[in-house]
Image (cartoon, rainbow, N blue to C red; front, top):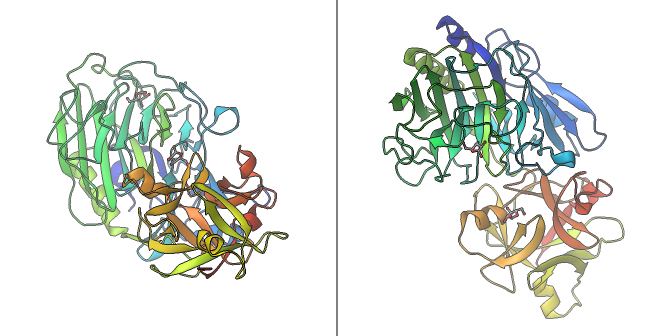
Amino acid sequence: AGPCDIYSSGGTPCVAAHSTTRALYNAFTGSLYQIKRGSDNTTTNVAPLSAGGVANAGTQDKFCSGTTCLITIIYDQSGKGNHLTQAPPGGFKGPELNGYDNLASAIGAPVTLNGQKAYGVFISPGTGYRNNVGSGIARKDASEGMYAVFDGTHFNDGCCFDYGNAETNNLDTGNGHMEAIYYGTNSFWGSGAGSGPWIMADLENGLFSGYNVKNNAADPTINYRFVTATLKGQANNWAIRGANAASATSLSTYYTGQRPNASGYNPMSKEGAVLLGIGGDNSISGQGTFYEGVMTSGFPSDATENAVQANIAAAKYATTPLSTGSALTAGSSISLRATTPGYTTSSLTHAGASVSIAAVSSTSSSAAKLAASWTVRAGLADSACYSFEARDAPGSYLRHNAFVLYVNANDGSKLFHEDATFCTMAGLDGQGSSLRSYNYPTRFVRHYETVGYLGSNGGVHAFDAATSFNDDVSFVVGGAFA
Ligand code: AHR
Ligand code: AHR
């Protein structure tokens, strides 16, 4: 059985079931998600390998070979039609055309389930999905439950990486108008024990970790690589539970009891839209990774949720390398030569903080040779990826800021580490390697008018131009010039 079969047996059927990694019903054979590729902007659907099975990652890998892909639709497997698509603007605008949010890269969150490759949904700040019709989703004070499986190592303190019930108009319509799982370290409203990340409830104008408005020490920091988070609510009662999604341990209850000690949350005023990766008013500062999740009609029992957790554990989520293509050797020094016709004698270099490509050769000055040489380090944010330390400025690394590349001193912050981490893959133009941003995997190290950027394939900035994209993001890795 799948998670939604278990919820059905418990009398609390799924009314939304989203996963890019697997079918959530034993009999489900339909499409799990839709992807769009950069080369020709066409789309295709990814279905399970077999009824109830793991996503057919091969469909994606083939369709996206030699180009970029975005996740355009996360289908609702429940039959209610609650598909998640690119979120529209609301109280906050997204970064895309007309204020829409970004779509997720199709390759930002590779995993295996029982040894079979699949891809999760890697949400960078600015990325969000929504369905404002929300057929069958709880309204007002009606009972509901939900769970999601997240990456417990991918989070931030922005508002708000959520999955669940929200407003139908993308605006903050008041306390109690949301009931969504929040995951991260935002402590502006609420917090739990330790420094987070915590599973909290986004009930609108507040992230709640229990009865108290601010801190509830019973809500622990939970940062397993794969985290199961559950939230459920019924008349003046709700609960937060969590577990290691990759281990056959049952869910622990972090809160169960009456609605928070604040006005506007009892009774609730749920509206019944569904969102992923954003706050109710389209706050877009959160980040996290979603693998699967559902929403139910009715308040699931603890026993039903425990059976779902056992099902998730049996799916055996495991990691798979974020870097593919030829490996780099930590500690070695390299050069990165451009492959765009007309620029093939240019290499990635820097002058102070500014990054560009420029012609460098064995006859260049020793300063020019050093400036175009980089020491490979294990990724500051993820050791499956890499960071590039400037040969002439020890302690300074290639990083992005507002999607422009710089060489800056490592300030030790989580954000710097993420901005300075890149995962490798075979060069998109068939030559060398492409360096994909760890925290914005839709974006790659790119030269545009010879300046260094973090470009996406056909985004809103001039440096996102689709023309010449594959060439501009492909670099031949060679020995260091100095
Ligand atoms: O409740 C926290 C956040 O507050 C909501 O997600 C958002 O709508 C509002 O800004
Ligand atoms: O480059 C994109 C973002 O811009 C970086 O993550 C951050 O440092 C800056 O806000």
